[in-house]
Image (cartoon, rainbow, N blue to C red; front, side, top):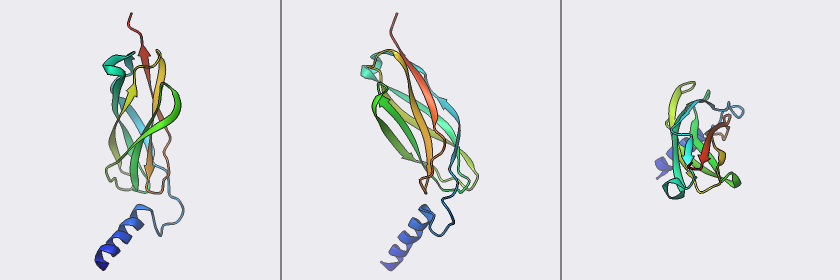
Length: 138
């Protein structure tokens, strides 16, 4: 029992940077690529999936999760979808997949999702924007 408790304490210390100076450096996000940027209004029963990938790197080696955010029809509160990411070493770059659903039952126009990375200390990377267009059929 005490070994399990000790292992949990060590794991929590590693995850949250216990014993390290400062708050560390924020992750770096780059090279956004995603599946599609145009969707027909009301296509696919009112929803579509945007899938893609970004490159991520954390100077401290404690990259924790990716967040994809969007708003329903560009209004109201942001909805966040978060996923744990693969463990990368200090300064190591990796390709990180993401996906989210978006509403297509909105008025025609330009919308966007936002993608960012967080480390175990809750430092946030820059936010990358993935614009997409909803259009009416001619």
